[in-house]
Amino acid sequence: MIDRRTELAGNLAAVKERIASACAAAGRERDEVTLIVVTKTYPASDVRMLHELGVRHVAENRDQDAAPKAAACTDLSLHWHFVGQLQTNKVRSVASYADVVQSVDRLKLVSALSAAAVRAERELGCLIQVALDAESGRQGDRGGVAPDGIEELAAAVADSPGLRLDGLMTVAPLAGPYASRQQAAFERLMELSSGLRGAHPAANMVSAGMSADLEQAVAAGATHVRVGTAVLGVRPRLG
Image (cartoon, rainbow, N blue to C red; front, side, top):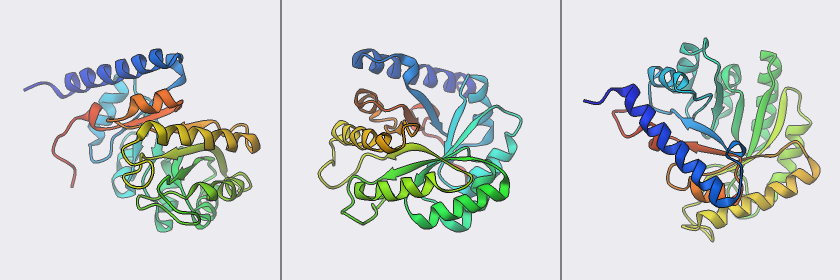
């Protein structure tokens, strides 16, 4: 049976090569794209091995898994990204360990994050999650705000104590005009990012692409890709 660290090292090397090849094909520098390894459902021991292998950005989507894992890894130099739909009753916990919340999609959440960040004496980076399948004024099935809601949320984040507006995030939609058109979806996100930067020049982070479509995200211009299965593989889950 292959050693877990060896398995992770091989998978990680393959993903890094995919990113490098995608950057070369798009005429981009490799250091323009940051890999975030999504460690949801995997144990803290995997996070520690990934850190040994050079990973510095990890992501989680459920606070009940993330909080104890982050607590077990406080000695490591890691940037924790929260990428799941976030309920306000979990905000105080998430604000205690997350460096970036990538799933900001409503004003109530902005207010709660601000209060929690101030209480914890921390600054939280925030990405507006964009639902490209959502109708005007609505939210997507997987979270996120319709494109016409970005401006209001961005202004709220920028004006809130303890929060820093970092940019935009999306998940390739399963329905609507961009279904099965990942690169077109990511290119649309880049257009929205360009508009956002007109008012908020420092909000230049664009988080898009996962294991199956990271190449399309890199081609479109994403600055961060979120990869889970391609690095961690498919194995028994926690819980």
